[in-house]
Length: 596
Ligand SMILES: Cc1cc2nc3c(=O)[nH]c(=O)nc-3n(C[C@H](O)[C@H](O)[C@H](O)COP(=O)(O)OP(=O)(O)OC[C@H]3O[C@@H](n4cnc5c(N)ncnc54)[C@H](O)[C@@H]3O)c2cc1C
Image (cartoon, rainbow, N blue to C red; front, side):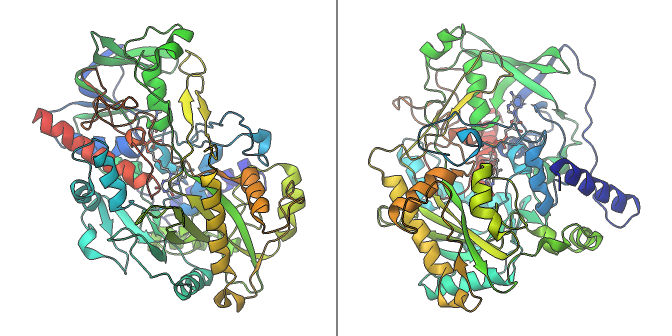
């Protein structure tokens, strides 16, 4: 079915069910006051994504502060709250549509050899279209942040924020680490029988069942998701929706910030474009960038903050020569490790367009529409190359496959040759899969300007698998072999599980399952997990790579902060949405400490 037709069908169904009173969405559009050419607020915040939503929720608690939130995108789509269908958002205005620059020896099997660097655009940002996998990261991760010269960012300091932001309802949990009164709900992912078998097989292979957001993440578990009664719990739905009527808060959508206004190294406002016109918003106290790890560096660069040689190339007057965008870490994943089953214990998508499924989800929070990308399980492991206590391999168990079978999300845009010759043959079978991700890569990429035009996409280099020692690829291959050990275990053997071992087209010259074969497969189909960080790295002034200090203030500047995933200094054993919420929460407290 054509994607746009499918989107239309889903939308019409929701509208019809709502109009006939069979579901209640409880969503009211975001309204805003008339816009003046020039406006003044205490705080001007750029970007309503995961961090920006958390930040605005907390700052607007102070009723005598005035807050302006500027968001380049618009409102969520009508289907955004439905996990199963929300993935359609990736093909709409809700995605910035970034593609990495073509690089050697990576993305060899993807269209135009370019990696999608997906990013959410709209109120809620990337949390509108992400997979809702709920992972915090470990004590070792955050203690490392602190040891890099960032007091206040160690695990003991941050645990209260992780607890404060969540409302955890999963049945098996490490209660001394979990929160129950916060805005972000945490539930287990929708499971099929294959999810239960995954746990059994992993336990049999030596893993303990853990609450991986508790004392340790090492082990296996049902995936925890940020859903509230089965519906997406995004920055928009859980942080902003409940407070959007606050009188001191103005949220302006479709408002694209083009530069920060700076005088004498002091930020005093921003310029933005809405409906083709330029406006100015002044900040009495601070300008705060929460535009994410691609756009926050872009806005800094456009405003004269960044590597001098790059700015001069585009005729931008340099203000501060910081290493903005020069290092970007991300998680590469190989997510197409498929397996065929001889029984239907995997995800069955045949009910996902039925009225009953929508009604079941909205009224009871149940059913297959709770599933996103058929994600079920998670497993963290330490590779043979990792330091003690560091988990650097993540394996996700899925009840479907993102290219083969009926759950094709199109997320990995493979070439037609690869689809026709490798995956199509499995399309009518029962299929499950694993995604294997490298959590602490040595390789890194970067973000730089392509143009001084603020509407032109920046250049993004993913830099995957470029570490000269080849350590990253070795760990990924180790992860693939571990996933196979679990999936090809006797527990799965009862269901006739076999690997989808038709070689990836382009890798037939290698013996299937050799290291050379897996390297070839990863270099063809490995892709981003969309966890970009470190492009405005947090660190002390003595760190030549640092852009902000431990209070998130831009070095050498006044009244300018960054509060989003771009400040995360080093890789995490986690997906980045919960860390983004945490940064928003902590950022709000840093600001309150200063002004209250
Ligand atoms: C497809 C996908 C799947 C993912 N899956 C998961 C997952 O399952 N679990 C997980 O933990 N993480 C996941 N992530 C990552 C996670 O969602 C992000 O790391 C996190 O949302 C980033 O938060 P942020 O606040 O830094 O940026 P964002 O949430 O991206 O917010 C930035 C906001 O700023 C706005 N903006 C940008 N430029 C401007 C401008 N010039 N003017 C005004 N506004 C602007 C953007 O439109 C956006 O709304 C996923 C990401 C993607 C894209």
